[in-house]
Amino acid sequence: MGRSRSMVMLFMLLICIARPIASIDDKCAACKAVSVELEAALTNEKPKNHLDMRHRLDSRGQREGKVIDYKVSELRVVELLDGLCERMKDYTLDKADSSKFKWIKVEDWESAVLSIEKQEAKAHAKDMSTFCGRYLLN
Image 1 (cartoon, helix red, strand yellow):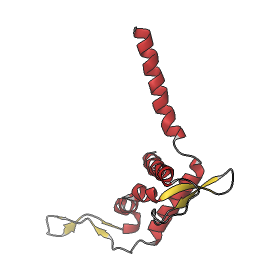
Image 2 (cartoon, rainbow, N blue to C red):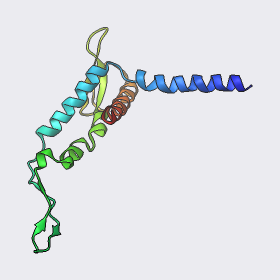
Image 3 (cartoon, helix red, strand yellow):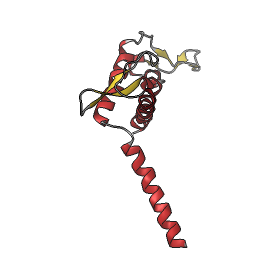
Image 4 (cartoon, rainbow, N blue to C red):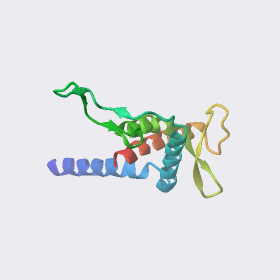
């Protein structure tokens, strides 16, 4: 009884490990789509001032701390990545030709003309969003 239970647990573990790996088709193209979306966010970014981190006063009453250039700040990275994976839900797989698929951005899901069913396309969009989250964590 114990051995069959451990075999089932091992099988379930293998399925859980294999599922995320196999969940996205053409990881290189998916990664490129993520980078295209990030590049678009960089292009649409509004210029911001430096971050003034001088909140403390020293013994003479002078402000103490750093002024950080926004372009190299962690805040910029957080703002750029915030919502990125949510925006990846606008991407889905579409047939480029008879044997190849490519990731495309869907502007309007209601009027989109796709070579695959919309339900399947939305499933691919969810996979892309999940891939983005795993990609950014690594």
